[in-house]
Image 1 (cartoon, rainbow, N blue to C red):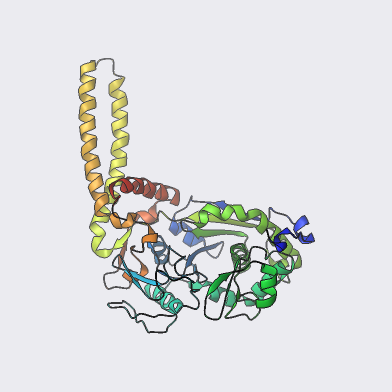
Image 2: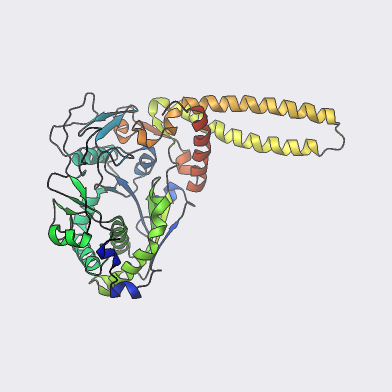
Length: 413
């Protein structure tokens, strides 16, 4: 633990830790969530780079989105900002696989012109520009802003927020800095580094500085969205990672939010409490290139039918085995026939899972359907089940299929 982490500031001893609550809510459908925006803040935070199927489903609804652009090539293995992914294959835009120092996405520039690209690529253009403009072109009616744009749109509020929190000792979680070349390095003492370099994107630091901590990203989105809507309840759509750790931040965020309500010039305009509900969307992956529509339809239809048939078969089995008028031999014959029928259903089911293997490969493999596929003439197909089921059921459905796919497709990844 470094010197700054050991120091206890008076403001940290008295703050209310219940004023910024984070919980998980998967009770609604994606369209229901989209339709609540404005009354409540409803937004997705993703990263700049290649956007995977679960994101495409939200963008297709016009859902508000902020793309985080403080990622590093070789580290961000969900969005792969140094790649362009289409046709289930990745081509390198900049950097190399053995690169020792990562480049912040805000600074990275294109080094390779790719063949058969669905968008114009120029040597030296910012990768951030390529990925952002292509995403907006793919979904022209969706509100998409980068993290940097969001900071600029709310610069006065964010400058004051981060300055107050730093002065109160809450910058102890700052861990990295960026130089003018976009090279990212670790820092040993946040207070000293901030005094010498400033904080990137705060108080006029536009090119270099210490990178804001993840908990302060939560704070600034909580505050700016509450100010936008006048409501402390908000729905923050999550990918596969955020939902795992977000709730653990509640206590520290509560301390800081209470302090800001007391000290910030805009504090009186903030609600008493932030109720941020993390919405897990990772199961919304039933998206394929349009040419593969029929086989995805068949998989989803068979899953639904298979589930119903299993319920019916179980009810029939209970009735048979509790029927006093049937002999043991008749029950054995029924059991044998049931096993054979079930095996036929499983074989059909497994063949469809294998035919739709693309939706079950890990996004870290950089071979998923991306927004660049959506820019092509035939585009992508989003199965209606993504919009029909509450996310609790949609995620459960995907998890069930993914577990089966893992056994069948061991050698694919």
